[in-house]
Image 1 (cartoon, rainbow, N blue to C red):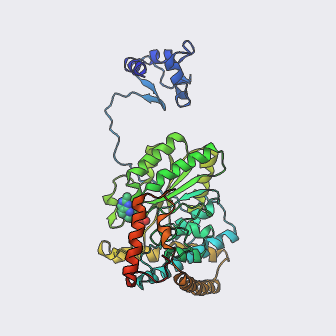
Image 2: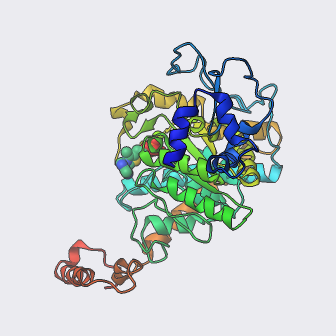
Image 3: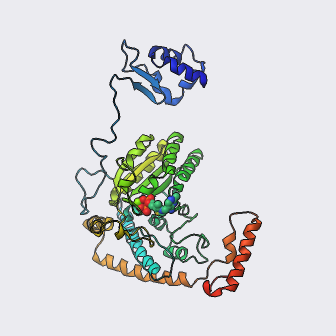
Length: 451
Ligand SMILES: Cc1ncc(C[n+]2csc(CCOP(=O)(O)OP(=O)(O)O)c2C)c(N)n1
Ligand SMILES: [Mg+2]
């Protein structure tokens, strides 16, 4: 390598000498070998445009040819024009002119719409259950239903999902039942996580949906590793990871994008840029043109999409999936949206943002109402179908809550399993202490827990 670097120093200013090392006259020279790698292919092209008498004009550098210029030209910190945002439907649910989108069948569109409404109704009822003290925590997806459901609709069940925590709609689309959602939130013995996670931290092997990672951004690099493995196994599938704007402010996001680019991993990064990371606005998180430009910086094909337009999300995710798998490459989608609800039940967002801002997004830019208008325009939905759906859902959800609440909690022993093959003595001691504490203070613990 040192030899390579020394050579590099001495030859960069002399293009003809550099090329003389790359041509067939020295096919077995170590540098020639290095330069014959795929990424150096441009170095061997005969039609290099910078062929003139001045040998300081260009350098063949990993990745392609770089021109030398006499001006001292700094890259601007911003683009003259911000990256445009792809959309199919306008705010009124009308197709915009020149639209270019993947057609959705009536059957798929009806499922997309009913799942969006189901998600919103579930959020409303579970949120109320938390306010009544029946569950300890909840996080809603209100305002981001299109990103959730339309992306899920565009994926295949074989695609592995690595969620943050505001993507319950993906799991809903995949067939996780309302009872399963309720069982997790009520931490009963039917919860896949055996009651060891906070409410709204769903996960399901059956649905290829990794358990929610609310340790912000940790799931992003996991998705890259999984994608690389899918590629090595030649699977017709990709991995998909969701995260917020706040997630993109973590180092993990940057490392993951870079790894994905160099390993050419079939992963779709879907950033829900909803303007806020709890109380921190995006203007205090980054000064770039949002998140989409970071993809290009890492060599990842990227697009900005209207996150409140279900048809745009559906089309972009389907195209991204196709490119990710057939071309073996990562894709970044920045979906512009807004978190209409509070961050979680532990937050009051009116303390840091104006109520008028929330109201504007809730009323004027609602993704569910927009999609409904398009459905109605197609004759695929009407007021009667709407009230039937809502009434049925409310009944069903209230019932699932009652059932989930009445089921006993997972046995206490489950708290100490599934990490160690043979639990260490300190864990055994803790189990013993917990049993003793429960026996001493039974009034402070739920009754329906088997020790
Ligand atoms: C590593 C880590 N740091 C901080 C937190 C606290 N935290 C929880 S949610 C959140 C904001 C995340 O914002 P964003 O990714 O934009 O998602 P959103 O809630 O807007 O959907 C933060 C900082 C955490 N959970 N994990
Ligand atoms: Mg956010």
